[in-house]
Amino acid sequence: MIDGARYEKAVAAIDAANAADPTVVTLLGRTGPREQLHAALVVEWVSRLFPTATERLLLAARAHDIRRWEVPRAKYPMTRAGYHEWRRALRVFHAEACAAIMRAAGYGEQEVNDARALILDMSDAPARDAETQALEDADCLVFLQTKFRDYLDTWDDARWVRVLKGTWKKMSAAARRIALTFDYAPAERRLLDLALGDQGVRSGDGAGGACSSGPCASR
Image (cartoon, rainbow, N blue to C red; front, side, top):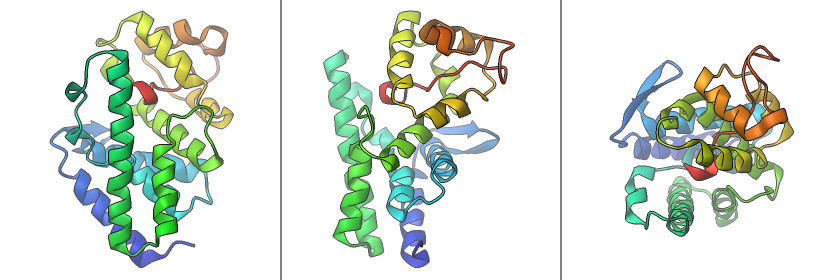
């Protein structure tokens, strides 16, 4: 059962932090700071994928990319090693920001550490437990819904194939089935088919889209 007072206090603090994102976007008909909207959508997917989600999972979902713009990719070498260094730094940054907010809201150290661990464990394959998997799945599904097309002109086919193949392996069977229902643009379907081959759903099959996860661990 959710403790309403402290949970709402923590949610408000996370939302306030993400409201400072200087990038304003429109996602699925909602307009606002990018990280704030993204966080809300991830929470919605976590709640759908994991109906018995705990407070620690819901808060980790809301804070998993908190204040992300403060740790830009450009601060690290533009190499694969630099990329992985950046991703590790981001996870620690997000986990500690979430922990500080939870403590201020009245959560005990065990609950705080549990939420920290969920954020720190993201992108580990396979996921260590059902909660981590739900968080990873939700993040990937939101990418597919809202950000996939933003990267189309940025990455070449070879990179897309590598990223999509790797990320698909991280998604649960349930999340993959949901991904099948999304309505992909032709350019998105082409890349997903290149990456997934027989695992993909080509135009006219199933729900009319291709199946994949988004490059959650590589964006």
